[in-house]
Image (cartoon, rainbow, N blue to C red):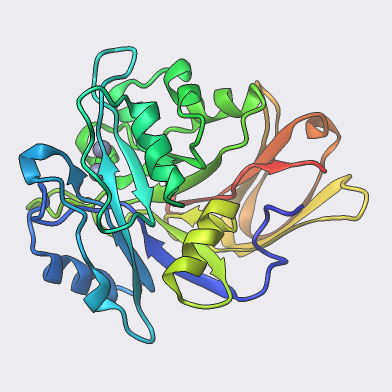
Length: 302
Ligand SMILES: [Zn+2]
Ligand SMILES: [Zn+2]
């Protein structure tokens, strides 16, 4: 199971890879934004300001915030014409060069994403549920590594924070996409869009390139609080063992209506048999007593 983080060397680092400061429409300075995350237990961030002419095509330079115990990845939220419904694309690119060139007039979402991917960036399809992206839209970003399956800002905006439905449809077609959760923080007054969801990335070191490689390889999980300590399959891939912080539900979820569920007080371990998923994929969600979730990436069989 090469894409699972748990058997990889290193440790988990906590990061938010989608956020905005006043270089675009965020309501605080870069300095305040970074410090808020540093002071709230994060190991890294990617500042992903809106890459549009209105803000003079910002690629926000966060390198001066890198220390021995905190780092930053260079990123942006890319925009271009258009979804099937006419809205402009939102695509998160993490690990961009600072001189990434502005979009050209006839660049579409898929072509802009590809140009970013060609620089080595991690490409995430942002918040599809928030703006009605279709399955065709999601599948059209062929270079995408991942879909943003939870966005705290979108949850605060319109209760459309969660995008697993379209992600599962894409996965069921055979596309291999991982799944990340973020804040999409804009720091608006009285708008709860910070510290709601984050990624836990397994890496040998707290280094921007290593974290970017781990994101691209899917060596991470996403959470609103619960910890997924381990997910491992037995050698013949007939069962999965899960170990977490205390939760009230553990779910194994696959294509269409396929699932397995274990509910109970204070669950920390469980084993699910895997026959019903073995021709496709499955993923794990756990839910704690306060309703907070953690999500594994999809797991494919060898
Ligand atoms: Zn967006
Ligand atoms: Zn955003």
